[in-house]
Image: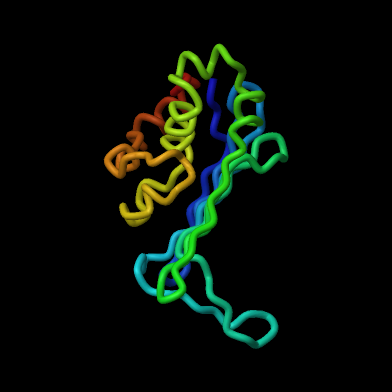
Length: 160
């Protein structure tokens, strides 16, 4: 069972900031995704030390019960670099072998988590960079019908 308790999207100049809080199989989840509109150029910010700092064009992290289990940082520009992490063993431990088997293994679980968490309005080129095992940009374009969700909430009808 999946219950979303908070979904907040902030738009700051050319950056999208998505924060999602949810409960999945009894685990408290928190997902953050920061996506720059410009996918190909380096993004710089004047940091607190009054020095220019390169910001990631994409940053994402999934935390379950306070434990960071997957995430990524992607920097564009001349010094393009990427940092990507997934703790497959801890994901397996948390979801159990039966769940993983029913989803087709860790890759199926990662794709499911990507559909639940990823910002579907971020630039489509980020889909392959996100830490969800190469999820399709087309899958990220799926959106829930907001009127249905609002009506379901008002009538206390489960949406998941």
